[in-house]
Image (cartoon, rainbow, N blue to C red):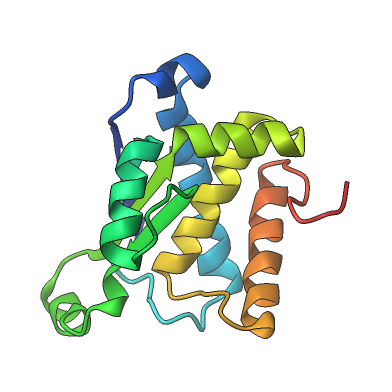
Length: 174
């Protein structure tokens, strides 16, 4: 049975369309590759694939990300990506049983920070966008990088998914 996974994209800053050709199409491709990889390679993750997976993505800016970062993390500064995982909510698992789909949560990416980091790393904006989106998706699935072991595991999964998209290892030393 084919699943109708969905990535709902809101482009809430028109500068995304100036910086990246069809970022929505690219993000859907990244989303599909990430889910295909996770379904095939990591069947022991917390979330099953017996229902369609749904994620919301906001392609935003530093101002909005800074507000959210301050409100939810107490950090009054912009960051590249924020993920708000529904699995962190105790009610998620009960609601999950009743829902026809798995609403994993929300990801927001700040264009200015993304652009600055891509320039510093000398990589295409599209590649860095893919990396941040994959990183956010993994957080929604329950992956984290609080310990070195967890960080290594998460980074290795990111590298493998990005390789499927013909994107070089973002963690390699220049």
